[in-house]
Image (cartoon, rainbow, N blue to C red; front, side, top):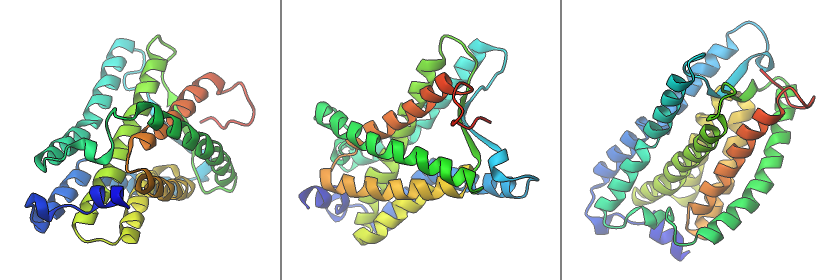
Length: 265
């Protein structure tokens, strides 16, 4: 309870007007995952109106940006990873303005072993369940075929996949859990409403994968919010998310076309 109050119910003390907090939150989302949610909706409409079933279409997560030009491709990959983290830097700045810092949401190195241990357990529980759920909804025709990566077979492939996994984890957990819950608490939202908003937002920007991708990530969002409120830290969630995506990206790179149960685009 103490951690939840500290991270979600703050604002008047910092002298920030409710209108300022509301505008700030909308701008952060518009520059990051809120915009991704709108883009995912447009992409899903395109998939629905395209001839053929959803499972016959592919959603590529990490793809080549300059086919046949590996150094240029690497530059684009690194550029994309770096710019995707700018909203996290913005959040750090905004929290520093409140004189609480990004450590107030548990994104720091104060408990690295505990965060990694908890994250590993969460990843093990969610990762396997998520894979089975994906295979099921794809077979039922509610999901596109997710292609985690389609990078060329070059020396930087695995490092870039790992970096992309970490970037996804940091961006999503800092903004969709730590920052959003804090701001919604400051704006007077109930815990239940804030949980629902966080989960729906997480599901929305995965809609490009299909209905299954949206629902699966909404469920994951509920679990992550509950764990955040219990632990008061996004650190374990970042670790879990990074591990899940790393296994998905690197595992696909190593197994695609070699095992029959893994769908490929």
